Image 1 (cartoon, one colour):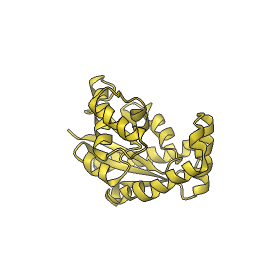
Image 2 (cartoon, one colour):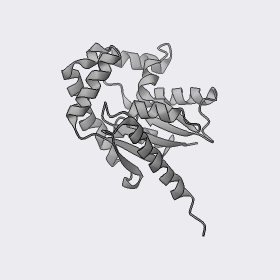
Image 3 (cartoon, helix red, strand yellow):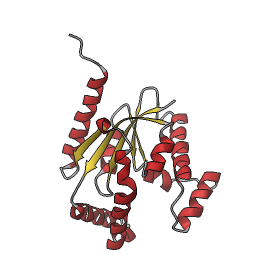
Length: 202
């Protein structure tokens, strides 16, 4: 079974997590933030050990392992009845991070819409990431070189994902607006999806 899915997509600092959390409070949406999945890994499992092995050396974790961890987290949510795939829509944030992951996930997710939280100003993203790192007390993340690297990685590895999905399912949302307006635009676009599925009867 492929899960009905919406993807929140954008550069670090574009507000994916904020929007994902809010959408996750609305009935019939299940929000899965990839960052939370990785932070709560059980390192005793085979795939958890493999993840730890790569990340502890500062190496990139292979796409297969990343997607396998994500799959396990989703299946656990289904088993715990937190995510009911027959009636809920999955809201993803932070995955797929590159085209390799998007390809592997193809057999598991049926992507209905990709919301591209667009923020062309690097300065805005920089300021947001710095603020967030200080607020969450993640001082390493407040380092300007670290922020620069994350934004560069997004441009080179993640942004091409947008060209993987059909243009007609990508909705660009201005991420520089206040969060409530961003949410309004996302919900308005989702309703467009629903209307698209149900032709109006005369």
